[in-house]
Every structure is written in C-alpha cells, then in structure tokens.
Length: 340
Image (cartoon, rainbow, N blue to C red; front, side):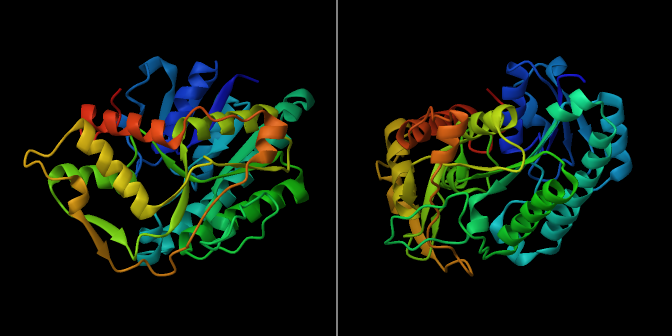
C-alpha cells in the first residue's frame, strides 16, 4: 500500500489546506473534486504541481471511485467533499441531499469494497476520516457555558446540518455493521486564507474594501467558535494517524465571538492596516439585515478528548489568526484564492 491519500473535496478551502499539510507530511495527495463554485484549481496553486494529483470528478461516481482506488491503492481516505453553505441549503436543499448524503453513501460503499480486498496488514492500516461540523449538534443557549462534546445528541436545524448529520450516521453504520475503520471529526467555524467569499470573514473584508454595507444577521448576537483552518487540518491529520476506528473527535478554536463583535474586530484591523481614504471607520458600514430562518444561537466545541487522546494543540489565537488573515486578503485581494 502506498502513502497516497485520497482527499475528496481537496480543492475546496479546508480540503486544499489539508492537501498541503498531507504533502508536507510525506503523503501523496490524490485530490478528487467536482470543482463546483466552492472548489478551485487556484486553491491548490500554492503547491508544486508534482506534489499532488487533481482528478475532476464526483464522489457519487462509483465507477470513477473504483478506478481511482484500484489504480492508486491509497492508504486512507479523508472525506471533505460537501455542500456547506447554510443559506444555500435553505434556498436549495436538494443539492445538499445529493452530495452530502447520497455522495457519502456511495463513497462509503466504494471504500468498503476496496478495503475488503486489501491484504490483512494493509486493511488494518486503512482509515476513512469523515469530516463533519459542529452544526449537527444543533444550538446552545447564548447565556450558557456548556460546549458540544462527542457525546452531545444530534439536533440539526438547517438542511445543511441535517445532511451532514445523516452522513455521520451513515459513517457510523458502516463502522458498526461492516467494520470499515471510519473516524468522524467535527469542527467549529473555520477561517483563514483562500476561503470562498460567500463566508462571513472574507465577505466582510470584500464588502468593507468595496465601500458596501456590512450585512449582519438579526441583532448580531449569535455566537460562533472560530478555528483557524491550519489548526483544524492539523487536528484531522492527528485523527487520521492516531485516532481509533469508530471514534469521534471534536476540534474547536476556544475562541467564541458574537457575529457583530467579530465584524467589529475585522473593521478595527482594516482601520489599522488599510484606513479609508475619507478617514471614517469601517464600522460605520455595518447594517443589520433580517435574520436567517432557524438561525442557531450559539456553537461552541469542547475538544478535551482530542487534546487528551490525540495530542491536539492550537497554534492560533483568534486575534492573531484574524490579523494574519486580514493581512493576507489585503496582500492578495479580497476575492483572492490560491495565492501565497
């Protein structure tokens, strides 16, 4: 068995960051990505061309999956591919059902067939890491101190989170029923370079620099826990290398922030690094807009299990990570993807 890793969704924001980490760790990333609007060749442009292979295709294409697995004999699969934008899931849930549920099912089936034919030693080494989200757990009260743990019950509130919860249940079933060595990870909100501009942080930077309003849902009190994409990917690699089959590991940033407070923090950084020509503060561009349907009040992850069992540790504080991220977008452009 080679040190090839099949990375689905590896041309997306988080997947491309993990692809670089895997290459640096001595693996050869075989990236399978459909290159929808959220995936881009540009996201992998920071890597040498010979450091990975990109295959454009769908995780729902069982013939393609069988061909790739047979030809490249990967030692594991890290499954990032997903439709991930909550607003899009509200306006058009069918794509989320097709990709996140049906696509994951077909990938699990293909992985199971491949894994069963491996020699004993290679079968023992093989891992399938299913990348999920804290949103499967639902919402926490704004005034509470509890955090999601691996034992928190699922209570998804959006079509997106429901589709990811369904995928998690499928992954667990393929472990319990068939023995496929699946590990599932949940993370809090990611941020960092090369993120698609539909997401909160790059969108706010783009709007601020363009002189547009900065739209904040509701009263802006909704709380999210933020993790830098590099910290998240480091956690996923630990789960792949050290995690136990059948287990779940949560990765958080220990960095809760209300949405309005986060936008104001971004505005202050922009005031510092790129002041407006008229001398006004970027904060004056903030506007409140009608709230998202079913908007979860608060997410927060307890990652003590990952710290204890995997040795997970964060490199970034939110303040340092946001400052680095803002500087990157200022250097590369608010819509930049794939630059270093």
